[in-house]
Amino acid sequence: MRFAIAALLAVLPSALVASDPAAAAPEKRRVPYWASIGPGQARMRTGPARTYPANWLYQRAGLPIQVVGVFKEWRRVRDQDGAEGWMQGNLLRLTRTAVVTGSDPVPMRLQPAERAAIAWRAAPGVVGRIGDCGHGWCRFDVKGRAGYVEVGSLWGVEATEILP
Image (tube, rainbow, N blue to C red):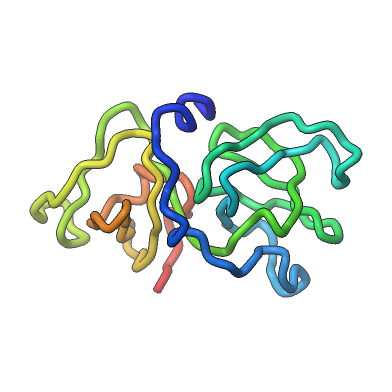
């Protein structure tokens, strides 16, 4: 799945990636929390140091990731497929993104309602910026094409989460 996502989809524009690394003030963030991969390449390692072997190379900026642990400047992360490992905190951003799940395209609606008109459709594996989440919907922006998507179709946001 990770390879298919990386191979099939284009890298999001650099505007998607904020300059605030998730490494900043780790003691102020409670785990788990959501982040996104900043650079176009980021290694997941088997332990919290560069001397540990890399067990995965992510090749997509903006990909959502869940931080499940902190050790100094390292973050224990979990990806969409459930793989866990360690990444340097400076490779992560606090920019909220999500990836479309499932096997069929999902509607991106003009309003956060089941009967609202469809503005776009997003294919499985598409990554976009999220915001304005609540009541089971998130505003989902893919390179300027935005609409509301049900959170059950996204990985990178909790079903009960409220985002401004």
